[in-house]
Length: 417
Image (tube, rainbow, N blue to C red; front, side):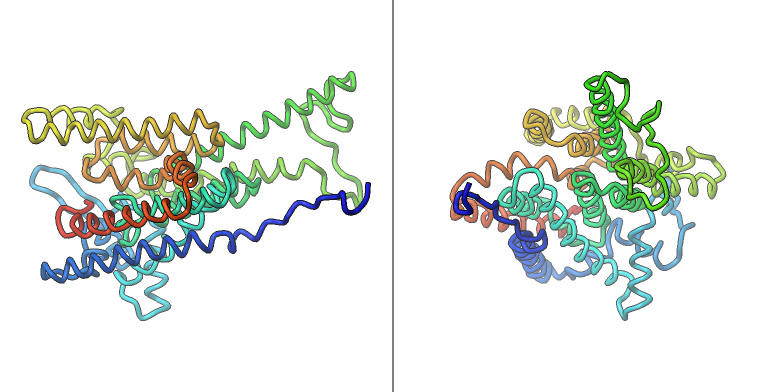
């Protein structure tokens, strides 16, 4: 065979270079949303920066950053709203940034969210690019940007920070970087309760990886007429290397185990600390959430909320819309299963969906609670990547304008709780 007959596969550009288009598109969509919000708020005599940084949960986060934990509000009906319900990573970052810069706590929260939203967009691109290629990666990022409640990505909330940590942890699992995956999962667990979804993804993917490795060893041993591969003792362990030996092929297994051990430390550490602080043991955090009327009831409260919409004709339309929305989410998840998405993505998305839809929390917050479930967008991103670029760009631009207008309207009205 001659050199002319030898074909060399083209090398792919580095991930940061491949992600440039996605990040530029994401930044443009978010900038449009902020401009429309500023104009809309000014027309109504409101301050857009205050809407983004000093209402609802953002106030609770800045209080934790400034004063620490221990603040609570007792409502006339007996409910107790404690700031122990809010996980600590975002307020820690707000305090750090406030300490080293002239930014206020609110300004620090806004800055963290802006940086985290870009990191989340990059992580979503990395995952989609790994599974389906760069074109789908760009489309997935843009679809995440134009979500109707996408303005939350620019608020001093923890959704952007959590999504960034979750996306990069999943990417680390997909690429076999187990220690990084476990570390990022631990940080995600310090950000939101739904960090359990990232831990579950790391654990399931790790367990399946160990099982495949064991099956491969057994299969190899049977081919050689033995139970185990040469040099492997009973139980699948390699003998200790001699002096000057190279790293054994079992080092990845040790890193995988370490990553799996690291993954739950963030969430477990904070929950146990809350239990110790409240004096109610490991389940103390559940009591804190109960004070906010948050809990997991399998979707019963949400089903009743939807059913109550059918008491009149106008509200029945809203009820039908909610049913259609839930059906769409389930269809997207099933489509991902049929498309054989990587198991770590399916586990992560399934847990996020279950926790969002089956919790008895305030129902108006469910759209933003679903925002981290970005793998649901992959089937839509694949469909958007098929038409010509001009058509995809036109559709995305229309969605961006609609999302910007809706975000400004929503944030100046009921907004996210």
